[in-house]
Length: 454
Image 1 (cartoon, rainbow, N blue to C red):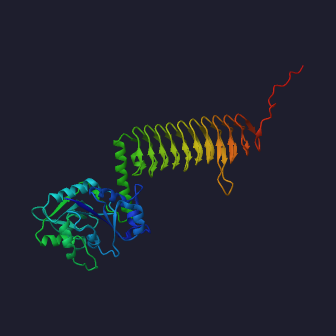
Image 2 (cartoon, rainbow, N blue to C red):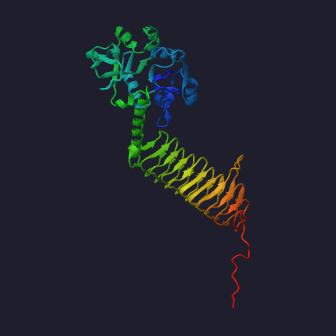
């Protein structure tokens, strides 16, 4: 039996009260729709994504991971599936229908539903949930053999029916031929819409048996319709992510105060202290110590790095680098192995080569700093002249004195030195010492021993 997956994602999501399409709201740093596309990999073909509101934005995010069908008018779930019929009819034996606003649904659950339908002789199988908080979902009625006989919407349910704890989730696995033959039989509702739930009545009327699988994890089927639901989904996804990393050998000192996005990678024996935010596609090596109070966004860290009370965004640290407290590495910063960047330093679009020490206070922008160079406190590269950015080149084993201003473009040769407070506007030759404002080489006879007086 072959399988296709349809993802319903055309709705406006008006209860989100947002200009952003509902399915593009992020959960753990990733648009919700991508989670649905990922779990749809239970099929061997890309899913069919039913789009409508914000279709161009959805396509831009999902790309070629799905096939697209437009639902010009949003006339209910049954109408949405009808739009896929010309694309999928005769293509597979089974069709799964899921939603773009259920980011917590697991691929294993869909696989179980698919396997249940494979073993089932009836027209379709469905997921249900047994819960004390039905959230307005329709109640499931079963016969003495356990097969579904009806779905009663909450608005039309009796008092006894409202007490039923098993609810419909709207996730189905259909026999494909039966589905395509019966979609046309769905009646139009008083609202002018077509609902997949009406297929239950159609199947039962024909004597078909409908199989229902109750969920074991209620959190997995949380649908996001409001910002409140979005926060609930975020909390559950974060719990899952943090648990997964702890089981993989990462220490989270306080998981409840640690945010890790879905695409982040962390090496074994790394320790994450409280109030850290690991965002985007950040990669952290083994045996690192991150935090407390640090934010890493699309950062790439090697092994044994230490980051305290700092922000690292779009930057790279090789092995054995330590940053902070209160450091800021901006886009394009690259710190080679063994670099030390202490408190209140900022680096942007610069490379600090092996063994560089930047102990405290300072800004390096558009710079290349050679191996084993020492950057004194208060050093600044004046890299912007109001119109263009300019580069500063600092050689190996250089000593930059405290409060030096390097006015780019400028080159400091190997083993050169600048005095405290120097304003360097011209290149400095290798081995030279420059002093003053503007900085000039030290006179050759300066500090010569005085002749002994009698």
